Amino acid sequence: MSNPDMSDSEIKELIRNAAHNLEHWREEEAKAKGEREAMLKQLKESERWQTHEDIISEARGHVDELDAELRKLAVDYYEMTGAKKPYPGVGVRVELQPAYDKAKAKAWALENLPEALDLNTAVFEKHAKGVRDTQSLPFVTFNELPKPTISPNLSSSKSDEE
Image (cartoon, rainbow, N blue to C red; front, side, top):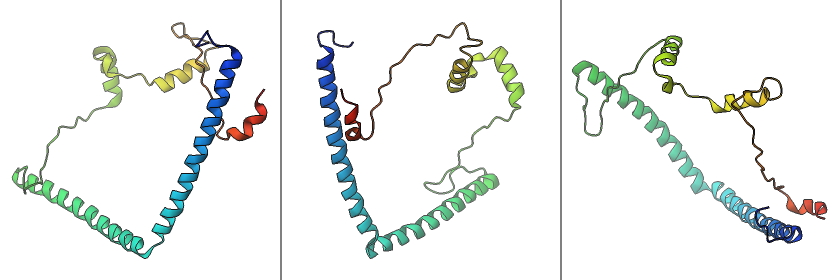
C-alpha cells in the first residue's frame, strides 16, 4: 500500500472520486471534440475551403515535381563540373556510403566490435517469456509490474462497485 496511514475504505473512496472526476472530464472532452468536428465539417464543406484545398493540391504537385527536378539537375551539374554549389541555396553533399556483405560484417563484428551489435529487446523478451516454463534463461528474472486498467466507459462499470 502506498500510504499506510489510510484504510482500505479511504483508498476506495479516493478511487471512487477519481473515477467520477475522470468520467466527467472524459464527457466534457468528448462533447467539445464533437462540437469541434461539426464546425470543422461545416468549414470543409464550404466553397472557400474547397478552393484552397485545390490550390494546395496543385501547388504540392508542382513543388514535388520541381524539387525532384532541381535535385537531379544539381547532381548532374556536380557530376559534370565537380561544383557543389551550382546556385545560391542549392548544394550537393557528397557522403560515403559503405557497401558490404551483412553476414561477413556480423561475423567480423562479433569478434572485433561487439558493441556494434544491438540487442533487439522486444524479440529477446518475447523469447524469454516464451521459454520461461520450459528452458528458462538463468540470467533472466521476472518481476511483477502492476498495470492499472480503466474502462473507457466508467458509467457502465458502476455496477461493479461494492
